[in-house]
Image (cartoon, rainbow, N blue to C red):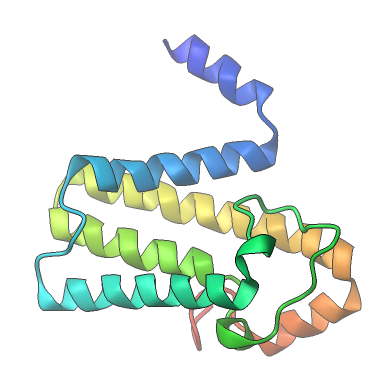
Length: 155
């Protein structure tokens, strides 16, 4: 079984592996427990994540949306909506929602999957930023200096 999984992942591109792991982690939370946090704080964090994700998608326009880190050849650098402050608001949204669900569960599996998701999103973010720097050049380098990657005033 592990050999099959290993062979499958080796055949995938780096981008595909990052997206596969991201969606596997998200699926874990949505398929193995409640999709809503049980505490008021958890619900607030989850709602913030959902709202941020929806705002980012509306700003980006559905036609430009892609789960893969490679920039679209016809894409343009967004600097409006949540992108004024965060370079990766959809990553932040995923982490907020899944983080609230992980803390809702309070078990080792939930924390382990959330830790894997955080690690994966950071790897995906770094990979995407290298591609965006290559694609947009100095414009993206300046944008990086003016914004936060995931969390305002922190990172």
